[in-house]
Length: 129
Ligand SMILES: [Zn+2]
Image 1 (tube, rainbow, N blue to C red):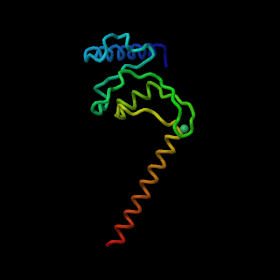
Image 2: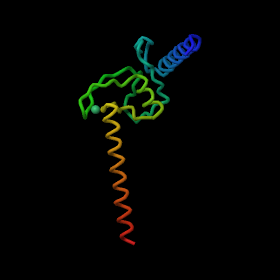
Image 3: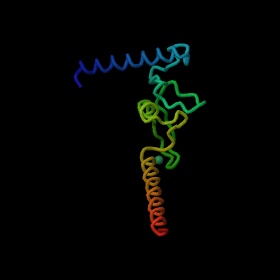
């Protein structure tokens, strides 16, 4: 990236942060901009999937956690959280519990079981006709 582009990106990120903080203030979710730590990304609540009475995260900050399956320490970054809650529309009460590789294993296993169930149902349906 050229220094010029880098400067523009930094300015855009700063503006995004300011406007997100302004919306949180307007919505009465925070009383002061100081409630959003400097190393956190302020949340855009209108982009989250609200899930009823759950109180939504007001900002995203790197979270260190231990994988439920292999016990490895991993960081769920602020950027990953923003993607998860605002773009993938993950439920606001959901938290990362597995590391990247265990998550993939878990997902593959779920897909495999779903496929076996589908085949089983197809076979059964074919046998009944
Ligand atoms: Zn793991």
